[in-house]
Image (cartoon, rainbow, N blue to C red; front, side):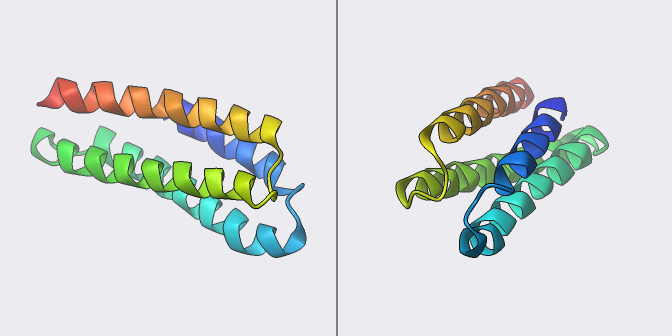
Length: 106
């Protein structure tokens, strides 16, 4: 949960530097996805064991969508390469943690 929290804070800072047209489209979409992931992880922590895997898989799917949108932001030059790398490193770390959590539940 802490990593996703930190990712949101980082993205929030970067979002301020996106071009205005991208801030209100791609920026808000990414912000919503990050908050959805945070919500799913909190839900997983507080859920019974039989529901945890379902919530974690949903969070993993949203993380993959976020990864693609961030890459798209770099490709359309809305996000500079350095910020892209920093975000992707954080996303990859969260992905490894989610993957480990999912494996432990199987």
